[in-house]
Length: 132
Image (cartoon, rainbow, N blue to C red; front, top):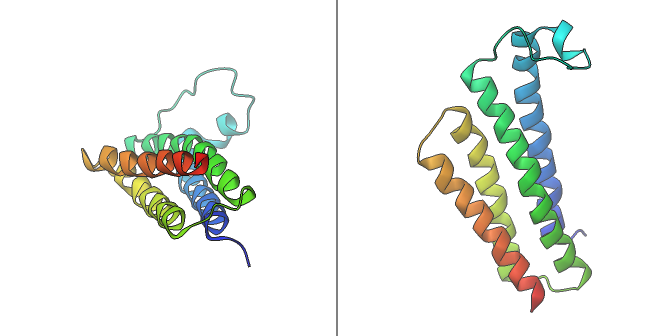
């Protein structure tokens, strides 16, 4: 059976896949296949809607968040330091990332930032826990 922190890491990666699809479909429609299938050496001639652009930024932010969370989850697993505490932090991270995407897409302020801080904060706590 997979340790909980790694289960959450895989689930977070699947959230990233869903976020990518949620962004890619409208981006391809709005920008046109001529641009999206090109080398993108120039700026697009059409603009994306605000929501699609926000989904793109949420997707990029998720990649950034996954890097630190992935490090924390892998270190905790490989050093056999999984505890109820680190498991709880991992699940909070996943919940925050799931909530973050629609909060960003719909421009919820300050909710989006609060959700981001929660996800980032529990990741930092996991990294600190991995040191002890």
